[in-house]
Length: 338
Image 1 (spheres, rainbow, N blue to C red):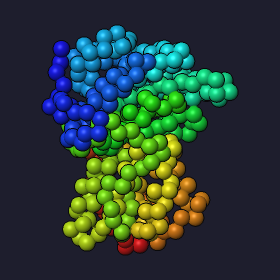
Image 2: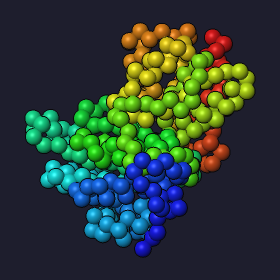
Image 3: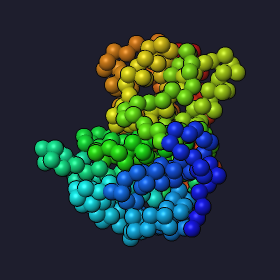
């Protein structure tokens, strides 16, 4: 049987320990399975040697039949999870790549979010979809989607994206406890990043996190773009520019209160997203703030995939289309000059 990692060994609820993002995901899975016998975990290869991304090490040995390997059939196993949820279980479903979520579109759009509504509240579908997202890993165009905004317009769903180890742990714990179906995106390039995690903490739904305070500009980002926004803020600080960096965390529901307070204080907004801007959470956020009459000193700006391109296979081109810390810093400087 696989042993717990050094970061996890001997930790208890309330303990604050340094973990990698990967260890945080594993800890959230372990704690959720231990807390509630109705929780099961399923997906492609999730029970084989800790899973493809090694976020599940030791879980198959510890929880036995509650860890379920599935065929490569996203619509099929998401539908199975729905049936299990309606019968009182709380399935966690892993999507190895966000790119293949659309193959489960019927279950995600037409089934999961509608059961509570159609049954007048008599039924619920507490299914958690763990989705591994993002580019930068040289997996090619069909294995690099972010997908974090694809389902944000669907009532009845919650959508979250983890940018830190703490968020990875707390968001997954919140999703499993929720009676609403919840999608939690993880970025594969963050799995080795380290940060402090409070064991037992559960994220508040619809609450963003201010990761760096500032007075000159507000930067809102998710997942890997949060890390690059923080890198940009370090460079800007050397120039005397104090950027406030917010981890959005929840795409549905959006935390408009936290972002509005920040933008009204700084007067400027830069949205950073690893996706095309059109139809994404960045465009929605800017629209909602504008409709609410949020005061800004200059127009809001966005850093997204270059020219709304698909992610190329060639490494130099993949790097070029993704938002970089340099591009983020340049956009902030431009906002201060306008």
